[in-house]
Structures are given as structure tokens and as C-alpha cells.
Image (cartoon, rainbow, N blue to C red):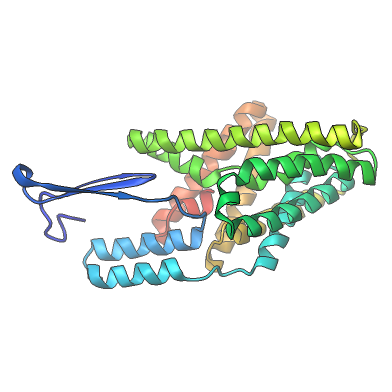
Length: 311
């Protein structure tokens, strides 16, 4: 981009929490350091910024107009309201519970936990202190609430309900970006992102452990039960609902929704086919590999970032 804009000799180094830029000839360069904070997961803005950067890099938009466009993109409100986002949390948790083999009771409990998590996410977005420890706190509340709901609705698989309720907390964008950077030899940035994802997962684990301990102390040990069987059409409905809910939760552009749903269907179908032919572990590899290839094809064909459908 610097070469195309006639900015020869300038150097840039981008990290997850800082950007360094050096300007001028090497014998008298001036280096600037910008401290930045990682933003929210918003696939719609990610795609818009990627498209804008490409237009500026190829000279079709001036840097001045590009800066003005960046301000408009960043300041744009979410395309989906709080009520729809909260509902999507519940639907996604219930659909994932079906993937994991849960019955009707587990699906209902997981959906309720997802709705509660969606409400807590909206609250934390407006309270900076809470947002810094959002994942451990949310894991704590969800795991404790799962045991309480099991006490109300009767014997269920608390493990399946809890895992499904927490599925939204997994750092999907952070993890896929880290692996992509490591695979393309951006080692410093990729290592930092991978460490951040690991710390997020570690926080979730501690939150679940503490919440389970508290829930057991208050409500007693939950009575385990084997999940009930569901109709054969349930997985098909769950795949579509989970993918559509991801569009809302990750704030993707509505025009990308069909491709995101297709990628979700591909992931489940390829994973089950691979597990049937090669075993469970390699089946998950087949699913991830298939979705990654499809995302790369989407990026080349549609000229939009692969993470839009990959995450």
C-alpha cells in the first residue's frame, strides 16, 4: 500500500494492542507508537473495513476519503437490536445442545441459559469494569444457573446444558485469526492472539468450576439422566437456526447470511461424514478443513474476508 501511494521507505508493524509506524529515510526516521484496544466481534464492520482498505490500496479511493469512511463504519450502529441479539443467544445455545445429543429438557435449559447470557452481554457492554472479566463471570453464572434449572425441571444432563449455554463465549474470531497469522508467518501477532484466546478459555474454565461448586452447595448435586431421543428432522432445523443465530450474534452483514448458513451446514455434514469414515478426531479435521477451503473460495469469489463465514 505504501509503495502504491508513493510512500517509499516507511515501515509499519501491527500487533493486537499496538501499531508502530516509522516515517522518513532510515538515517533520520521518526517512529510513532499507537496503543490500541481490541474491538468487539463485528463481522459486518470487518468486511466493510477490508473492502475499504482494498479500494484505498488500489488507488480507487483517496486516503482522505478513506479516513472519513472509516469513521462512518466504526460509528455505525449494530444492524440488529438488543432484543434480537438476546434471542439469538438463546436459539444458538438450544441448537448447539441438539448437536451435542441433548434432549428436549436439555435444549430448553440451554436456551434459557443462552438468553440469560445474552442479557448479561448487553449489560457488560455498557459497563467497562464488568466487560474486562465478562467471560469468567458469565461462565460462573451460567454453570450455577444450570444446576438450579436442573433442580426445577427434573433430571437432565447438566454438562450438555452448561456447555451449550457457554458456546457463545468461545473466542472463535480470535482463535481463527491467531492460527491464520501463525500459518502465514506473522509469528509475534499470532502468538499474542493465541495466548489471549488461551487466557479466555482458562477464565471460562475457572468460572465453570466456581459456578458448579456454588450451584451444588445451594441446590445439591443434580440428578443425571440420559437425554431423550429427538425426531430425525431436529438436526436439520438446528443447523439452520444455529447458523442464522450466528449471523446476528457476530453482527454479520445480512447479505452474507446465506453463505454463513451454507458454511454451517457444510461444517456439520463434513464432520459427521468424516467421523463415520475416519473416526471422531479426524472427522473434526475434515469439518474444519472443508469449512476453511470453502471460506477461502468465498473470499476469492466474493472479494470479502474469509472470517465472515469461517468464524
